[in-house]
Length: 508
Image (cartoon, rainbow, N blue to C red; front, side):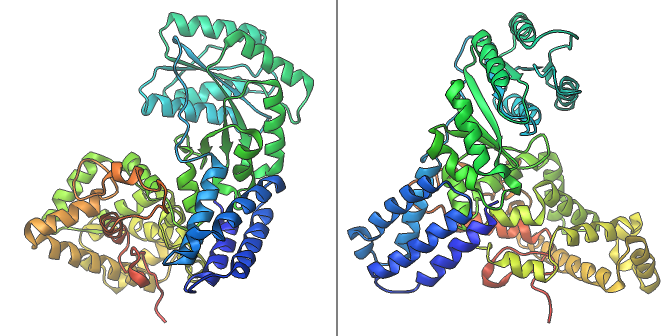
């Protein structure tokens, strides 16, 4: 997300960092490059002009001249401008303040991801807001659209309105309202039909559904990969419908980010959610501060903490901590750590949320450190017998050849993995002998990203408060917990004290 824009802006700020006082010429040149970077990211021209005017005015004022570190102050000004462009300091929560059932109307073009997003939102409301949710498909045109929502409903264990052939969207809406009310549902999500392009029939149908259902939220689902087309679609829908918010899908594949950066400024509508993956739980509440932090290479520690707290199985973490307390760490434990890393979005996903490591992505890619490496390590462990996983010392030369053939790797890959495991096992034994302090470190390693009440992890409330009026930077405790946590995923220590990654940096 925002890879291209992040790379350009990081280059601009690197050139001014370390200088003493900044002249107007320095600021002007920096802002010119920021302007080009935003335009290349497909941000709407009027939005870019307003942003540059705001940033230039503040960057040439008293605030920067009197600053101890002028370059850092300029970066903060750009950060503040991005936050303002994206919608301000505080996220806009979804409105469910209505007599049940509160109706949420999902609108958008065909292919934007409305049906999948409806299911993601239903799961989020059920899981985090403890709401009783029903979904209903009004898409009578697209083949199997209603069946798709029904299948997704079964997958996430959320009720869907039974399908009755031959009904019109208005008839389905009325039946859904009555059914949801009689069965005591808190929220009713209506998944409307879409078209390949905007047309009058689509607008009239959605407007009629809105008039009948009287939704408290009318969300436009737009594909962020379409760039300024998504912005034009939002404007067209908003002219005919009382939209209350936006949901941007496929944000994880959007390397430029032009739609996200333009939407709020052009339409005046808040972005409420972003879809960041294909899984049914891959829907994030949109937070302008955290997104601005990602754009400027500051990562998103809060998202990483929340992701880990969702994915971490508390009972398994407790069992693992008890095992580590005895100084035990076998290859089954290493495999469990690798699997958890995959659930959290893989190596690239985690790196994208860590502050200060954006510059290392290219170096990692050149060194072959990516999610395929994690998959290879998993394959190696899976090719071992139970006894070998439990007692790696059994792996002699002939056994290593057998495992290498089964995993499709070389013997040196197995040796590298075993060396990493030995380093981690030695660390575990050392901590287990350290008494209370060692136990606390192990708890941080197992639950340090916010899971299971294990202790030793970062304060989530403090993390959520980060970014108010300043660049969001993690405290020492949070980074220590993250380093311990990621060190457990593969050992090693990155240059500059960054969290450990398996097999990186590569040996010369």
